[in-house]
Image 1: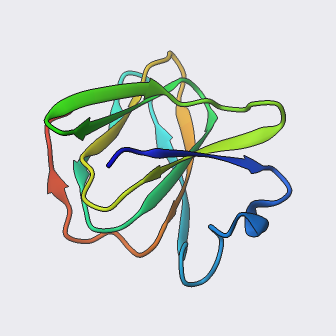
Image 2: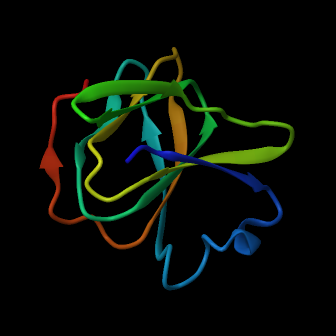
Length: 119
């Protein structure tokens, strides 16, 4: 299973069906300094990331192969979010020269995390 790209109009995040007390219960802002990465792990929760600033590369492993995509910061005044399914090995690498700022939503607090070597 691969990450799912979701387009969310800035003013309608609650109307997407993703925002409810049963689905997304945790939110945080994540800062990834230039030249570093976040994640490099897998876990049982669902995560949804949106890149608010900077240049980020989402990396994940699927069927034994490493995949990469550049996270879009803003597209025609819409927020582009990337949903990470449970147990999908993933990392977000800062591919630029300034900090990456991510908005992260999840279905539950972080637990049962296993490190992987994607980056």
